[in-house]
Length: 120
Image 1 (cartoon, rainbow, N blue to C red):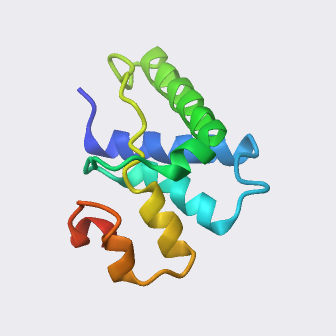
Image 2 (cartoon, rainbow, N blue to C red; image 1 turned 135 degrees about the vertical axis):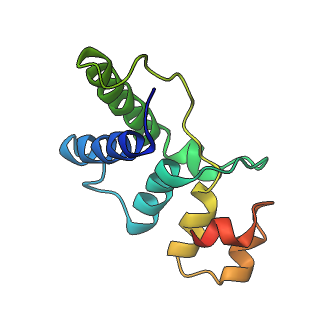
């Protein structure tokens, strides 16, 4: 059984691995925000993400880093088995637009997510 604290640590390690592998060296603030939103969003959304397509290489690296972290956790007995969940890209367009200076109302209009989920 994996505790909530262990999941948060795993997410942090994935982000650190991405930084160490240079995933954000040439990325804009908007792109970094969009990619990092995948680590925190829990709610699913029906909209397709334009940023998901544009940033597919960075998302592929995120998945590779997540798989590496999970494999290490399994190896050291922290996790029983690696998760095969996909990356949740539901907030990528929303965060990209918000980081670009769009107003909150316009940002919320992009999605069927609750406004509270966007703020968190």
